[in-house]
Length: 237
Picture 1 (cartoon, rainbow, N blue to C red):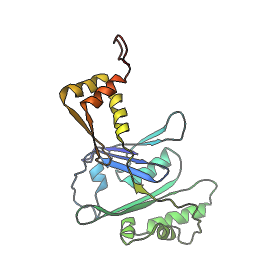
Picture 2: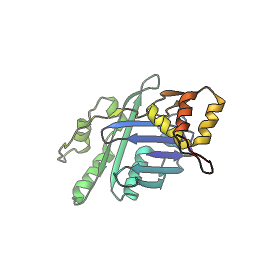
Picture 3: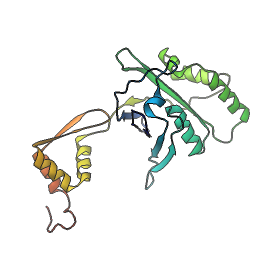
Picture 4: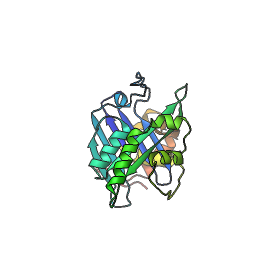
């Protein structure tokens, strides 16, 4: 997911894998805005004008990419708008996050509910009414409500079955090998410029802030294994 808005936060990037690994970052993390109706002013930070881009790896030749304009600047509302408008799946999304006194995340969670045909209109209407009447997701998460308890509240009076449980965790997939591939993608000239400027190059992952150092010798080895650029005679071995 990529949220790009006209607010001071500028951009939010989130990547999630099917195994429950999640990572993400914001372009300008140190944004301090006053509370809005007692809640974090997400739309004020992200902005209400911009784009939401969704990229899905469906194991096809090319990833699926969908894009819509930001609807409100609220993450949950914009996701629901995208799913309903772009993917034509009626959806309800609720998100909540609680911070501790030093600004760290003490609890976070949410729900995504989608209706697929065939379905009973009465059931969907009842679920919509129930969602509109529930208290703040942030409050319930802060109180320690489990996912199962959230389901009981959301589907009050509506029978449901739990088909699968899967743990979620922040885990970054960065590595020195991926850093080297990213540098190679920049091209020979850019790497040679790095070699001429400094003895060692440091690359920091935007997701987890892990830093990777590459010596001049390592950069030279990358250049040696690259194909010659267009117009360059000879070949490197």
